[in-house]
Image: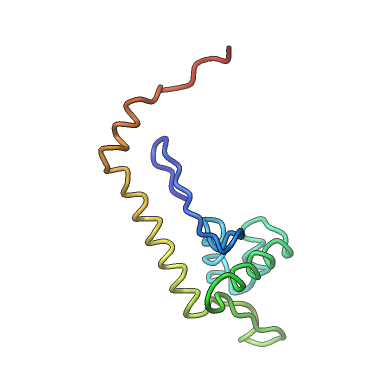
Length: 124
């Protein structure tokens, strides 16, 4: 999610009625990549393991290929990681977000801002 002045851009892609990816799921993918586990990513983001797992499940169900792979058990190879497809998805989504942020250079955005008050009027 990009916040640029008064503009808040939140790009969400839906699969049917289910959010397939948005800023939160992209942040989760980055946390899984960094932490190497679903539980570690959830802790880093202040989410329960169940919520984190449900989001990963949604990601894996909505896209053409698996986004996150998990390996149970002990050893160096246990945990979770982005698949090559998941890496491509994350990078493509972040590039799309950056492209949306470029709309602040558009004259229509500047014209819209010219119509905006500095702060709201008091409640009536």
